[in-house]
Amino acid sequence: MNEKLKGNHCLIVTPFDSSGGIDETSTRKLIDFLISQGVHGILGLGTTGEFFLLSSGEREHFMKIVVEHVNKRVPVGFCCGHSGTEPAIKLSQIAEKLGADYVMITPPYYFVTSRDGIREHFKAIARSIRIPLMVYDGGGNIEIPFDLLSEIIKSSDNITSVKISVPSPLKVKQIYEIFGEKVVVICGMDALTLLMLSHGAQGLTLGVANVLPKEISFIYKAYQEKKNEDVHQANKLFHEKVLPLVNVALGVRTEYIQCFKYALVKLGVIKTDIVRKPFLPLDKVRQAMLETVLHDIGIVP
Image (cartoon, rainbow, N blue to C red; front, side, top):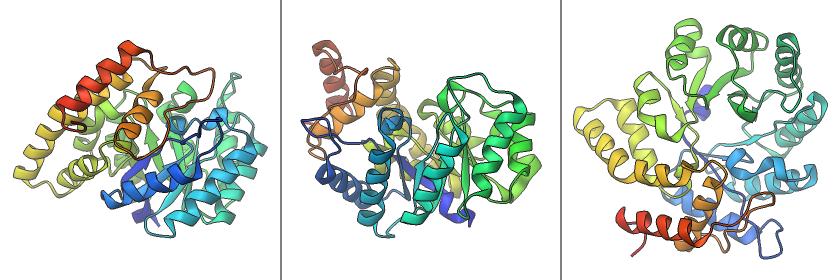
């Protein structure tokens, strides 16, 4: 069961058309591009996918498009996070019914929740489905304390992975020391990819993989196989190609989704770089900075 959760699971953007609706054609092109470039899985409707700006109906529609077009070529997961437990259960059950291989769940957000409430949130969702549940540590900008994270993992047999999107790379090692092979630990912070892989992370869910899927898969494989020459090449690739794009895109947290979409437009993969409000389009200065980096790392002429 856990093998499907390992590898480079690209955290895909949600392409929109000129009217702001889901662009089905661009979504299919993005999926084909990523699979052709060697990603090991597709993770939709994460933060990079603007799930919090989509209606429940739109989320279900997007899940259906992705599952049908991937057509079992690689494993597929979806973030079914919600501030309420019952809506998250319904979304998770829809994902399972449509054929998702796993769901990713954020802590309940917006309102401050008790430790017991957070644990019961994950437990209830996990027990409502049969497919694996990935805990999103850092989702909604909420870090789950390590002792509470341990309680959550122990609460249900199908809680089998943790995505760490907080600057706490030692959590990777700590989780494996306690849970061993029961849990796959996933790096969810682009800039900390090498550090988390060094501590034993067995999966990646990164926004930058939309633009550099082949490179991220190579880096992942190099660190899993631990061949000195490949690890050296992976480090070089990360610092010379991946990190410059990460720095310019994630340097402004309110604009990194636009940056990845803009780059995909330049690559001819999706049609528009439109994002949902309250996000705003990149201004000319940011576009120029991004285009310079894309040129320097060899993405565009």
